[in-house]
Image 1: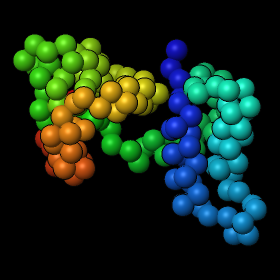
Image 2 (image 1 turned 60 degrees about the horizontal axis):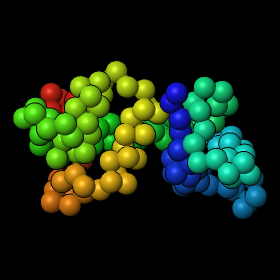
Image 3 (image 1 turned 90 degrees about the vertical axis):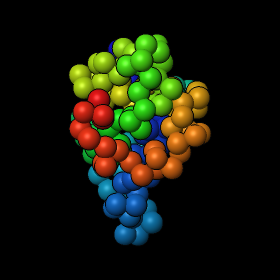
Image 4 (image 1 turned 180 degrees about the horizontal axis):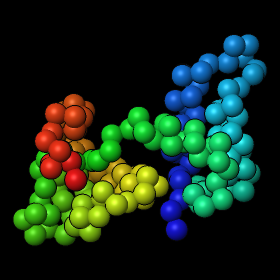
Length: 145
C-alpha cells in the first residue's frame, strides 16, 4: 500500500505557505487547510505515514502539486545496476526500483527517495553532491529512468 510520509506533508505545507501566504496571519489558503488537517490527525494519532487510499481529495491535490515541483528521479547518470549491482552506487535505488521507476506511483517514488536519502550511502549524497544539486534537467531522457 502506497503511503505519504509526514515529512512530505510538511514539505508540501511549507511549499504552500510560501506560494500562498496568509494575508492576515490567521487565514489559511484552501490547500494549506487541507494539508494541515491531515497533518494534525497524523500528529494526534502518532502516525508518520498516511495511506494514499482514503487521503482527502483536496489534501492529495495540494500534496501532488508540491510533488510535481520535486525532481522526478534521484538519478545522477552513474548507474551501477546496469553493471550488475543490486543497489545503484549513484542514486541508491535497487535494481527493481530503477527498472520499475516509470511505472511507480508518486507515493512509491517518494518512499524510495526517503529510504535512499536516509541511508545516504549513494554517491548522490557524498561524492557527486554538486551533480545532484544541479538537477537532472541536463541529463538525457534515457539517463533519467
